[in-house]
Image (cartoon, rainbow, N blue to C red; front, side, top):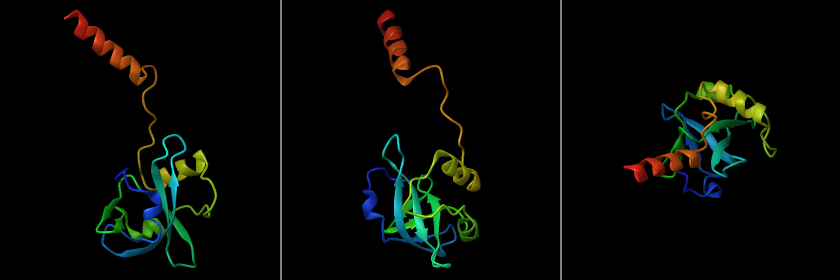
Length: 126
């Protein structure tokens, strides 16, 4: 997903599944707590006025519409947490598992700034 898109500009756009079938209209966009990057979209499916959460990361904005790389049936069966509330880490994990997305945390022990120091040290000694 393009990270330079204003999440407010996604609201009201149409969303389509991997086969080009219309899913519905984007109702809300949820941002990652740590980074502020748009992470989830709640799409009003029209089925009993229910919103389905879809991940924005593998999705693409094409010609003003959101294309989600999953089947409509899978999206329709996503866990329903309601909209207008914060998604807990447990709820996000359930959604990641539902869509079969990798939820492996980044490796521990070597923060990014340590890698930079090591590279700088090697360059200075060469």
